[in-house]
Image (cartoon, rainbow, N blue to C red; front, side, top):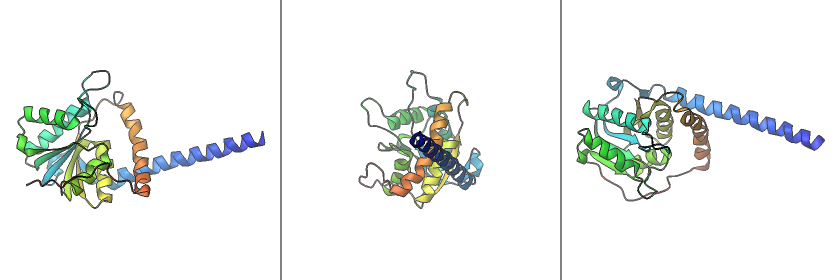
Length: 213
């Protein structure tokens, strides 16, 4: 019984510390990026590149993904307002017949964004990869990140850690009940940011540098 009691006590202590760590990580990321993310296009400075973070066009049940289309809306608004000259699409292309960058590119072209103003990064498997590769592979030290607010906050925080001057232009969010799983995952993803810093995690792939003229 004594051993069981110790296990329970240590388990509760570990759980308590974990909850506090997740809360601290979320609070720190939100407070340190609040002045760098916005829904107002007029508050965004002009930059050469808008980094559009990829997501799937469809959900696992076949329904269209609102995150996907809302990010495209934001990228279109940013480009057509003259705030950016190029859109760098960074997403997952690891599975056959699934390419986030190409799906997003096709939608942007439908909306009148010139193909030669769109650059694709097929190795954006994680937010960290997308942000770091924008600097290391595509040579950008300052850019605007395009995603939903909760995602932009984490991406901008990551960018700042890697010496990038980044801003976040927030795409419209989805219904709070519809996106609850995504929001829950985000809480833990923010905690993992600091674990990745500690472990000095790097992007999965490097590659040759790509010049964006």
